[in-house]
Length: 193
Image (cartoon, rainbow, N blue to C red; front, side, top):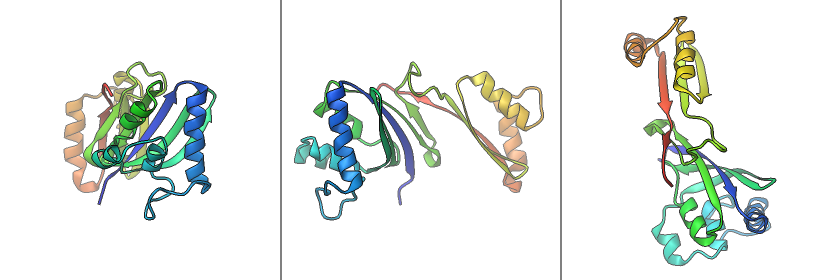
């Protein structure tokens, strides 16, 4: 069974390209367009790629196990939220080949294998750089931060301390493991593609 990653895309380009892409997605999501294969879900990312003209070889040789959750054309940006197996799929790579004028930004989170990554190095759309996933005294916390200092200040506040180090977090986790409490600090990797 796959670990599902939450992937958010912000896609820029010409209004014509964005409207075309939005119309295709909307067609599949609303049932106006039928999936290409009988056993394919309406929200499968592969439907969109195939409708844009992907070859059988592209469909077969690329990893496309992902499903659109939400989508909206927000001015000059198409925003897509998807669930993809294990991390980001090849959707963005094939889309870029089929519509080379598009600029595709994304951020992905898959806690099971600790995949936290974005290609938005400048934080144009995705400013998150750190995530805190914690359970302290039986209370769950899930927060995002832009800076390491604010991240560590937040963790310190959860533990009612003035400051804290990574070593302190590791020690605290070991001491509270049997209680089911934990603190995980994840840093988003900045990737090229």
